[in-house]
Image (cartoon, rainbow, N blue to C red; front, side, top):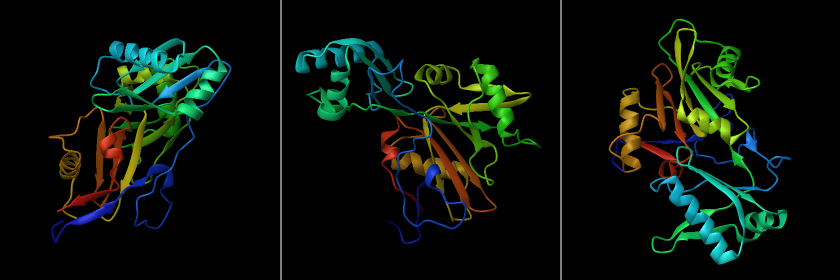
Amino acid sequence: MAGNSVRSAKVLDELRPSSGRRSRAQVSQNQESSVTVSSDQDLQVYVEDIPTNIPENDLEIRIQSRLEATQNLKIKDIRCCLKLGVAVIRLINEEDKVFLVSKLETIVLYPKTNTIINFIGEIDLDSYVVVDRNISKVPSADDVARRYMQSYKTREPPPCKSISIQFPNIFRISLTTLDELSQVASAPDFKIENVFATVYPRSDCSFFEDLPSNTNAEKLSSVIAAQIDEKKLAPTSFYVQYDSETSNAVVLATKSNKKWNAQNFLTID
């Protein structure tokens, strides 16, 4: 690292203190909007790390055939959603669910490339809404939730709150089903009156504080892309916003971005 480089720690949204600074990145499991076992989902198992470079139908066939061939398990149904990086497996009985989640836990999907998937009993569905920041008055969290309900035709407004006073145009929403999340991923843009808003489904929110004063969102995007070996960030997977008054930044990234999720620091020259 160069002598004039600055290394800023990643602080996840759910761990960010209301005041003060953190010097080290922290990791936790936010359960606010995770899918848990219910009467309709009691025999479902999730895979949240499916390969995103293989067609959905091929993945579904591969996962089912591997489980049936290596574990002698009968699968009722399986659905993969590449936009979310998630698979949902419906099983025949509770014993198979317990076996996959608590005993087997992982399986090698493609032995030649050592591609491994993990089985879990619940999945985090936290998502974020970004409203156009270049407006005179940002909509309230209630307005965002209400318009979300109308746009996606949900039964009720989702729990919604602003992530920070510094970034009043970004809201965290708590969703409850993968079907709803899949619908949002297919059409992430909606309008609140005449204001444009974009949903980043199933994403992490990270804060970076005390950045160099000459930083901007474009430079941060370039730095992040370089750290994860990409030429540029995909606009549907990343959102970067920098506050020049406080020299702080926020980064939204979909959970399917494994390289970025594994990063603990952001190094800026």
